[in-house]
Length: 260
Image 1 (cartoon, one colour):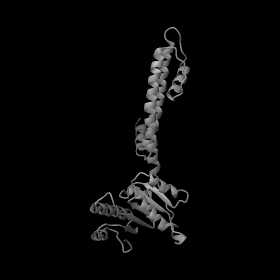
Image 2 (cartoon, helix red, strand yellow):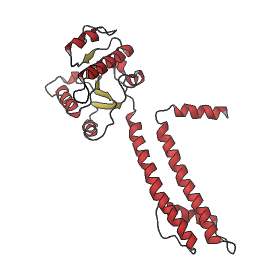
Image 3 (cartoon, rainbow, N blue to C red):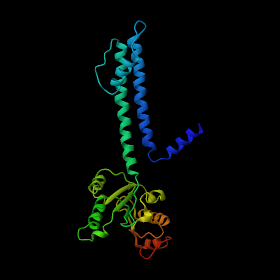
C-alpha cells in the first residue's frame, strides 16, 4: 500500500502529471456515464416481466454517450433518462476535452533542449514581443553572415506559444534554428532544461511596453543573477532602461569583462 502511495507521489511530481490525470478523469467519466446508463436502460426496458441482456444495454448506452442516435426504446422512462444522458455527455465531455487540449499544449511546451558543444546555441530570454524576436532572428540568420556562426537560438519565456508567437516558432520548425522552451529564466530548473552550461551566450531582452522602467530593470537584474548562479562563466548581454543600473550588473557575482 505504501509503495502504491509512493508511486503516485512520484507521478505527481512529473511535469505531465496534470495531462495524465486529465486523461484518467475523462476516461473514468465516460465509463461511468456508460455503465450508469446501461444499468438504467436494463432496468427500464427489462422490468419484472422480461429481462434485458446487459451487453446490449452497454452497447446502447455507449452509442448514446458518444452521440449516435437511433437507440430503440419501449418505455417513456427510458427515453427520458437517455435524453438526460445525452445532455450530460454533450455538456461534460467537451469541457474535459478542451481542458485536455490545453494541458497537452502546456505539456508539449515543457520540453528540454540538449545543446551541441560543437555548435553551442544562444539562449534568448526576457521580452517575447514577436516583432523584436523576428527582427533579431532576421539579423542573426542573415545570408551575409558566416554560416558557421549561425548557431541555434533557444527562446526561454513564460508566455504560452500561441497566435503570432506560435506562427513565428513554426516558421523555423523544420530548419531547427529556433526552439521555444516555456519556462522562467529566473528558475534554475528551467535554465538546466535549456542546457545553459553548453550555450555560447545569453541575451536578456528588456520589457518595453507592459512594465515600468524600474520594474523591467529589476527583472533583468534578477534574471542575470539567476543565470550567473547556474553558469558563472556564461557571457550575458542584457538590455536596461536606465544606464545607472549598469553598475548593479557589474556587482553581480560572476560578471566578466565580456558581458554587456
